[in-house]
Image (cartoon, rainbow, N blue to C red; front, side):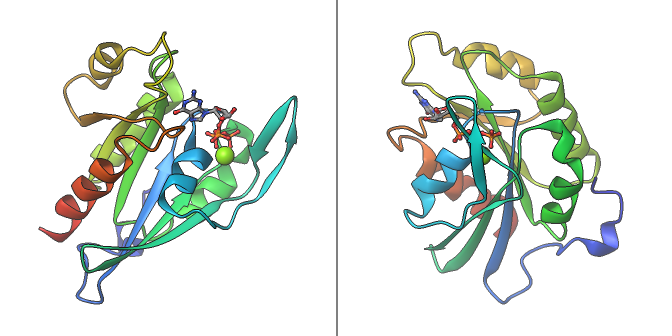
Length: 173
Ligand SMILES: Nc1nc2c(ncn2[C@@H]2O[C@H](COP(=O)(O)OP(=O)(O)OP(=O)(O)O)[C@@H](O)[C@H]2O)c(=O)[nH]1
Ligand SMILES: [Mg+2]
């Protein structure tokens, strides 16, 4: 997905714009994460079962520590792989949003290893920490010690600011 490094934005290039892309499996909480960043995001959701699902992308725009962050949410369903590739174009950093009640899926592990392979800064947001079945330790173990993992609840907003701080640090250093 990130195979052409020439298409990457590289380190933040002085214009103070940072593009972050949120990945994760179906219903891990990516759109909710985006809404914590920007209460009036662009979304492309359709009805799915009792809820909704993203079919193209979400976009949150936020001024943060002197940077303008463009945080894109991707579709979780694997059949939307083309949309994910298009939205990922030129990313500075990635965040893998994981449902901590189920642990990291194989798809999320694959995304994480692709990001690492291409040297793209990334962190894991261990989401849904407000739920009783959530395990931060399990997500940390699934990440295999290769990536920083932060506890988040996209329902309460807890931990989202810490993830943004860390992403800015990784890109702007
Ligand atoms: N309790 C709790 N529920 C959450 C949290 N984050 C998301 N949810 C719920 O999980 C469901 C899916 O959330 P979304 O934000 O739509 O997940 P998504 O990853 O964008 O889903 P797709 O676009 O279908 O891949 C919704 O019912 C949310 O309310 C959280 O931190 N805590
Ligand atoms: Mg979504």
